[in-house]
Length: 133
Image (cartoon, rainbow, N blue to C red; front, top):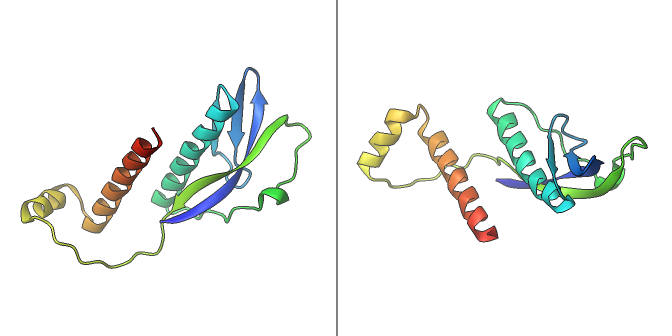
């Protein structure tokens, strides 16, 4: 996985805050506080990247945060860089698994490598959540 940082804008939205990514139309988030909005932005970006990759959509390179023009109609509260993980280049590895486990994987997955990669992503995300708690 390759770490990438996209600029995000937090704006006031009534009694709460919303977040949008200038480089990724449709990728938005929100929160009751600025902190909550910033934390939720990372989750929104992760979901956007995952869905884009699943559909084969090309992700644009992120803009430099200083290059994002200010919109006078938006009440900006903050600008931040939000971390996301892009899939990197596939690397061939050799692993050993119990034959029963391999048979169980083959019953539910058309692609063993894809299944194992997704399982690893889920496990890593869970470990990150535990580490941050």
